[in-house]
Image 1 (tube, rainbow, N blue to C red):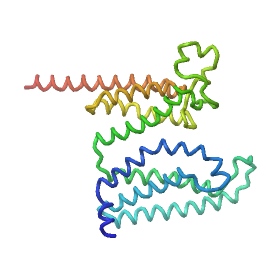
Image 2 (cartoon, helix red, strand yellow; image 1 turned 180 degrees about the horizontal axis):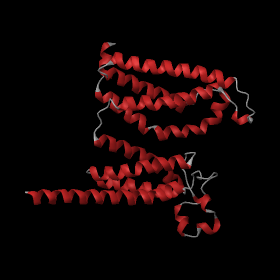
Image 3 (cartoon, rainbow, N blue to C red; image 1 turned 90 degrees about the vertical axis):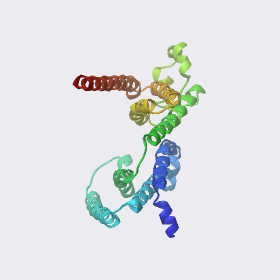
Image 4 (cartoon, rainbow, N blue to C red; image 1 turned 45 degrees about the vertical axis):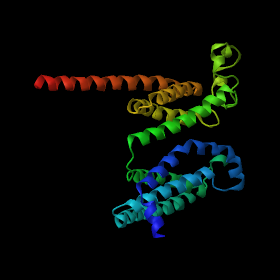
Length: 279
């Protein structure tokens, strides 16, 4: 048992556990296809179970590596106690409120508890991440994998016309129809693609966050062609989504990133000239 604990304390275990946990997040979104099954059976969704268990495992690994285990345990214990008091009072007051709500908006204790738990998980994840020593290359690789998984899902399903539409329904034609009269036969909404995902706006928001990180990674890494391919693929994906967030975001993020990059290059050159002038 001691040997297992010692192995879990290693830096690589926490680091690679976090990398795997982050990379599989887009894959877990496909779990929405089983939503009807989960609703009928009343069991907890597999993606929810993995996320809760994954964050708890990461927090446990971080606690093992902590230099002040007793202090951290007391702080998190106090936080858990306060949260427990809040949950009890919240449930007691919510049950006593008589609201005339439609059937689809009824107060359900298990759903409320899951919602509160999801509000707590980010704190544990941030705390666990703070205990990790991650290099730039490792972070860039994680960004690359997440971006490629999402974008290849959407682009490939668009090309073979097997994607869901961003505004419901399916994609009726692939991207080539944009330039061959596709809009004469179909509406713009019918030519959008979201791959096998469910909601376009969250995916668009995630891609906007990843986009400047990809550009930063391309500047920092040696394999620039791979990251340049990922950037072009992601821009294409953001246009395929057909949302304002995706389409405008791709152009604005690219423009803003390039302007900032040129600004810092110019600033660096000015600093070099100032040093030479002083000397």
